[in-house]
Image (cartoon, rainbow, N blue to C red; front, side, top):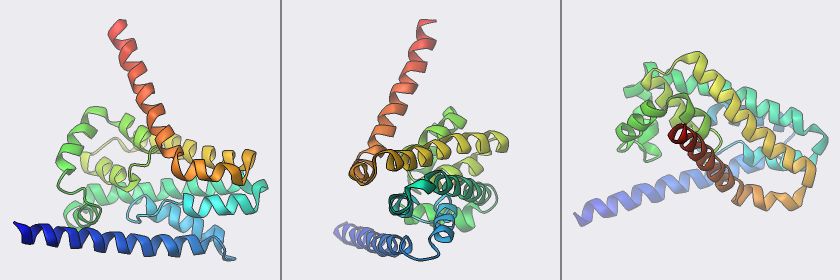
Length: 210
């Protein structure tokens, strides 16, 4: 039993070390002349396999050229949706070969059956809600494919959630500049989560009352 605990801790520490290095690498991309291409690339792969959200590049890019906030948010949205389709395909066609190793790396494989049951109960709502929160979006896209969620519904829910997320982040940076950065990086995800909880609670109250 103790051996398992030590091995498990070592695996988690190794995973965090990899993510830390990837985070530092992603941060450095924002300062290169290929920043827009890198923003598109990270937005794409984050929706299926990559652990670092595109916000890491989006935030310094908008702060450096605030007039381009719509362009940068649009890049994030378009390529995030394209990557979401890749994640959907992985979940639908390559679950054992590709999805399971991805979910295992992020520590979600053991809980995936429970997660899929919740997902089946909520359907497209879960895609729309989780796409706004700090929850790893790649898990959502893979689960959507594995559960066989209607593809057009999946695309619409992804456009709504990811579009809102990136345009809100980019718009706040355009409006308030550097002073809002700390709030976005540390508290905006929590605010999104609380907002969605209140929204769901509101719908549940309406259904109960009427």
